Image (cartoon, rainbow, N blue to C red):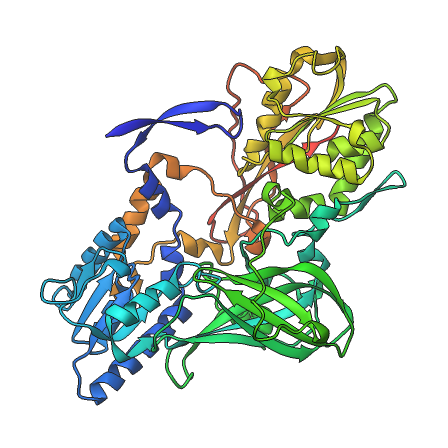
Length: 617
């Protein structure tokens, strides 16, 4: 069965009606999943296998039959490990139906159907008893319910329910324990992802709105490959703190909790950011450890395991705090059932046990809802801003009538500060418009830019006071853009505005060029590479399932990745494959390009990197 779906085209801005298969959603989920990445993670698999063998041995040493509950079984890998280690029976729970079907095929293919039962339910819906999903409660609990923040996939509620309903008291658990670590740092780079910073324009300073500076920011965790952030990019202000541990072999609570770690500041600085990661102890003694620590914590960084399903977390403090070496500080982490947040108190601000823990941060200024963290980074990039200001300075005159076409952009503000006669800005949402209005008000130039919440094709000369546009400018940036060519939305806007442009109007940028380069990834290839055999088990049914979804039409689209997090090696030179002339309207005929990329070195081509470069002239 197929159905018509309305989908906004991020390039043209139009609503396209497309015919979709009813299987579209789950094909997308499978194609963009990290199943292969997890199975290629040998360190994770090996540590789980060691922990499972040890847990099964401990139960057998007590003279008991080993009944395993595997929550979030995925491919069934951990259950097959358990049976191989000597478990008598495994109940393997998987809520995602396509994955549960694949697990059944994998279990059968490896000859474990008689000892592993796949249950396609959420674990909180599983029942125990003669007529239930499980005949008896388990005495070994195996789970892989974690994300970069540890608890973001609902690990705590699942454990809480399992201990109450699905496992025996005193059960063995693999992993046995998780421990969360955190370090307080100052980092101009990371802080630029959270707060708008001031910038110099022609001797004048544009300052951020006070409400933005006072705002605690977005609540969601910033998960990144912290190994790719150089230690030179931050200054530690305290030691690596052990914040809290969760023992999974005992009843677990998903209720709001807080934990604090006290220490003396190691240096003067501005407390801005908390770097965090966690470890898994696969056994009670802590001798089998799987750590998420970034590579620069290792004596030999190149020996650090790579994984993309579990990375590291960056948390931004609600406000920057000046600290002095020797200050007594208390770092507090709070968590509910799905997320963590941090706060910092000096010795004079210590929270007593009777006080409520710090509340979850939330954005009150709207800027953190309009601008993503990468977008904050762009807006605070001084070299980028200097390039735009230089380009604007070269084309603006005292009689210039400027129109900015980008979402939540500061270009109209810069144009006014550079002396343009009139400046207009098109914004795609009321919230985005209000954020830029805050910037204008903070700099006492609220009347200097007229913001219009209107689409380009709806704009008339009436809104422009009867004047024509002499400078059409864009970064270009649009909130709906994910892929490089989505920025061509600026070209479609320019075409829609053609009737309002002066004959000799300046289009800034005047063109964009799509570049391509074949690359060999150091590690990112793992997220798409077939596994075949994993730790001795045949998982080809999963490979086939993923490939079917990758072959599904919509799954063939390019994937957006922040390539600074994923090192790669160029196998060809960067090649300009297509140039788009913004001084002209979008042509009626499709634009095509074909050619070849000569290899310049031997290697494995995992894919091609594509990016767009814009030219001011």
